[in-house]
Length: 102
Image (cartoon, rainbow, N blue to C red; front, top):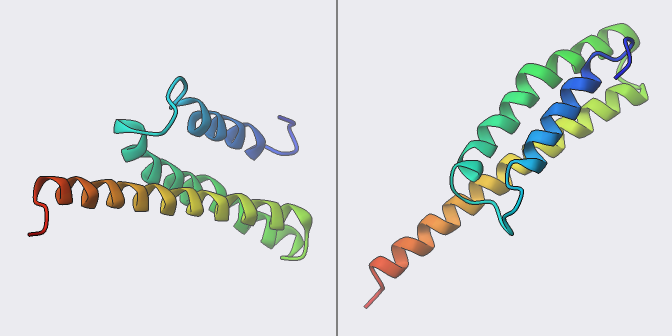
């Protein structure tokens, strides 16, 4: 990460956390899946949002850096949404197995 882009190291650490946590598993499960929505939304809100605001204030909303940070933030929201839908699907499927419709 360069000194001119302090957010680069944060994004690197965050992406590593999201990609390495389930290492050795074929799918996300257990605590990793339960923490994923909160971690990704927290990163988006508390790390990326200030970077987006600073970039917009400094250079406007037409720069590539602004678009990049917005894209990363959107990807984190997509990850959170997918994780929540997966948790919901698994919960509903488990409930259907326990209480099958008659």
